[in-house]
Length: 338
Ligand code: DAH
Image (tube, rainbow, N blue to C red):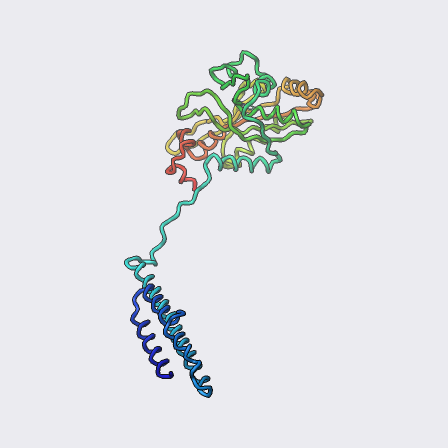
């Protein structure tokens, strides 16, 4: 029996040593250690071993099983290591990895975040309103007469229902005042829609940021200070800002705000970035009518409002010459903001 154990172990180790692939290794394991394998077959002969030798033979059997199992494990590891080495042949794993392109925020998102964060620091809260609007919220309540060119079917997208796609975010001024009492200090970023011919400076869907501040004593000085501070934060403290008298139906007096742009290799020039003004009392009256109270009594409250084009701010901020780049999603353009 002892000799047989020896012989099986020697033969098994030799067979395992000669194996060259995982499949032959498994075959060898089954042939040696499997139920019908040579070692278990031999173990069955324990019954005939004289009692006084049983312990010794048992130990030999165990020793053989352990040696064979260890050899199988070792061979398995060696085969795996060889396979790994083959897979890496000709590859230098110490070379730097190929760069992954991470996504990045769109310039419009960036400028919106920056504008919002500056204005929130100044106490403005975010507000919103629907993009499908009534003529009342888009025009009438904003003191825009029935024959105003902006109301024209050529300029505005109307639905058969008589509703429309808002042409500006000023609608949120009305929505906010309808639902809340003064003081009101809100900003409303969002899309606006116009039937414009698309070119380098016009899109039919564009982005605005509206602001409204109504309280007991809001002055033109507050308006100037707020917007100057905002533009200096956004474009840099030495940015020149000017307020140019203008007309909007919903503010009186009204202004357009320009910043002086110093583009490389060009004469500095004034560029319009926003409209603003003191809320026209007619707007407060329309709001009171809609609310059915006198919460916005023009004798007791005043306010200022402003609306700026976010696309335009982005274009100025980064010297983008064509507004269409903002919607084309060309990664060669977008990657520059990563
Ligand atoms: N709604 C105007 C536009 O789209 C911009 C504007 C001008 C908004 C003056 C205002 C404002 O709030 O006071 O052209």
